[in-house]
Length: 108
Image (cartoon, rainbow, N blue to C red; front, side, top):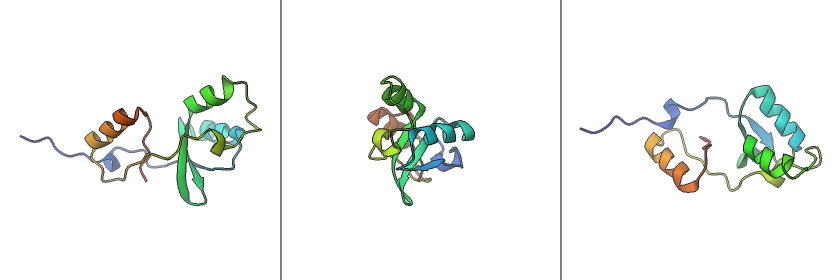
């Protein structure tokens, strides 16, 4: 007996929070707090190009004593953006996350 297929579209958070690649990290952190999210997708124009997580801000900014108003999203984002589409099977998405050692997988 096969398991029922569940797509990531059935489970995903509907609102993806985005920031511009030229946003300061202060703006990024404020947006994450306002929207109560642990990550944002970084875009150049309308094209998603990377992701910033709360861990990225801690490790790449706070731990290195960098002033968040002086750096841009594009300076610390993880790129290229690893993503899936709405129809991707949950098990396949999990395999991607495990192989790439990531905890966030945007659905675009």
